[in-house]
Image 1: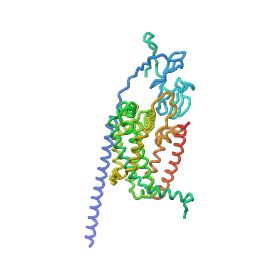
Image 2: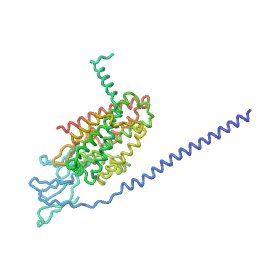
Image 3: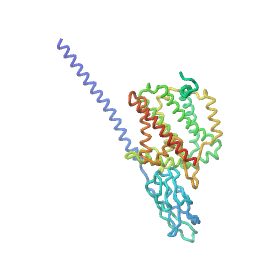
Image 4: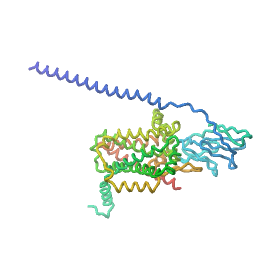
Length: 152
Length: 293
C-alpha cells in the first residue's frame, strides 16, 4: 500500500516538474518574441530618425522695406532700423506655431497660445520661455534694385 | 415615483430616450461613409502641397467640396456616435461583462479614432492644420526618452512635412484601429440601405455645407484648434507641454481603461473620469470663448 502511495506521489512530482518546464518554455517563448519585437524597433527607428543635414537657405526678398518698417514673409519678419535690416523667425518657441506681426502693437503674436515677442525677437509675454531666432540679413547690390537676402 | 414634471423624471426620460438609439449601428454607417469618401479624396489629394491640393479639391475639382465635406462630417460623426455608444454601454453597465483585456483594446481603438481625426485636421495644411501638426510634434518631443521616436513615427512635420501624417492617416492608424477593434467590429454587419434617412441627411448636409478651411492670412490673431483639442489648447497656455499634453490626457485614458474594474478602483476611476470631463469641458468653453472675442 505504501509503495503505491509513494509511486503515485512520484508520478505527481514528475507531472508537476513537466508542467513547470512546459510553462517555463511557454513563458520563455513569449519573452523571446517580445525581445525580438524590441530588437526590431532599433532598425525601424534608425530608419525613421535619419535626417539629411539641412543646408542654410538663402531667401531673396526682392523689394525695399516699405514705410511701415517691416515685410512679413512665410518664415520670418524682416525689419529695417537705424542700424540696418534684421530678420526674426516666425516660429514660436513655445510649440512652433507661426507668429504674426502686429504693426499697431509692435509685437509678434502667436495665434495659438498668444505668446508675444518684440521686433528684435525678445520674449515679452505668454507661455513661451525662449527668445526668437534672429537670422542674418545681407543687402543686395543697388544695381539689382532694392532687396535683401535672409539666411535661414 | 417621479412625475414627468420634476427634474429626476426628465433625466430618466432623457436616459430612456438616449438608450433607444442604436448608436453603435449608426456609427458603423458613418464609418463606411468616412472610409469611402476618404478613399475618393486620397485619389486627388497631394501631400507634397497640402493646402494647394485642398484648395484645388475645394474650388476646382468637380464635386470636390462635396466629397471633402462628406469625409469631414462622416468622420466627425463616427467619433461622436462611437462616444455615444460608449456612454450607452456604460449606462447599461454592459461594460463590466466585457473581458478587461478586450475593454482596454477598445479604449485603444477610441484613442486611435481620435488620432485619425487629428491627423485629418493636420492634412488640411491650412492655418489650423499646420499649427495642430507642429503643436502635436512639440508635445511628443516633450516626452523624455522615447518622445523623439514617437514623433518620428507619427508626425515629424518639421522634417518630413506631411509624409508621415499622410501615411499614418491612410494606412498606419487605420490598420492599428482594425487590430484593436476587429474582435468587436467583426460581430456587427450593418446594411447602409437600412438607414436611408440618416444617410440622405448626411449626403444633403455635405452637399450644402462645405467643410471648414482656414487659410493663412496677414494678422491672423487667433487659431482655434479642432473642437476636441480646445481644452488642451487652453491648458497649454498655463502648463508645460509634457504635463498638459501628455500626462493630463493619459490619466483620463487610464481611468477609462479602469472603468469596469470592481470595487474601489472602479469607483475611483469613474469619479476621476467624470471630474476630468468636467474640467476639460470648462477649459474647452474658455478656449471657445477666446475665438468669439
